[in-house]
Image (tube, rainbow, N blue to C red; front, side):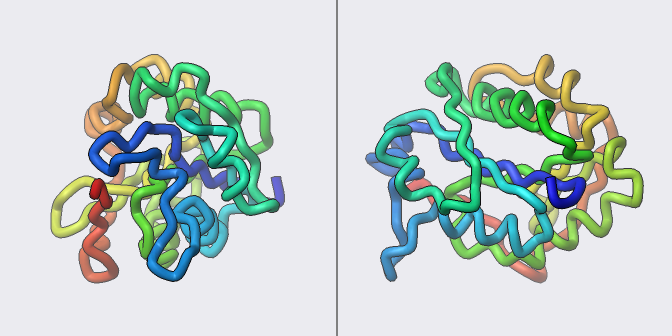
Length: 187
């Protein structure tokens, strides 16, 4: 780790509404969404970035930038919970104090959103919990301090992420609607 913040890009799903895994999608200029997500996390200030792959992992791996790590969620078909657990398990083996979790289907999300989430999370990264909200709607990225990783991993199941845990544990809601709409792309 080059600093205490690890970027985790969740990109394991099959993308059924998209018609293909979102880890394989490119923007109109040919840039892979996975590369765009990694760039955003780097520009946010993440010392290292890891991409969680699943569906079509072998094909998607070729689109991951060389300076990002890859972890494959073997149980990716179980939903976003499997991807998040795989990312947290990877993070536990690093010196990271917190993870900043984002989704591959947020192309164009400005790094300013991630920077604001990190800034407002507070100085105690290992204990921090914060998430971007867009005009009051919960979104990504989400900052999860190391102290919460085991409990978050136990609390998630199926196609539900850490939202309920974040709510129960008073995650800082960081309004970012002035920076982006924060909408994921499913089609």
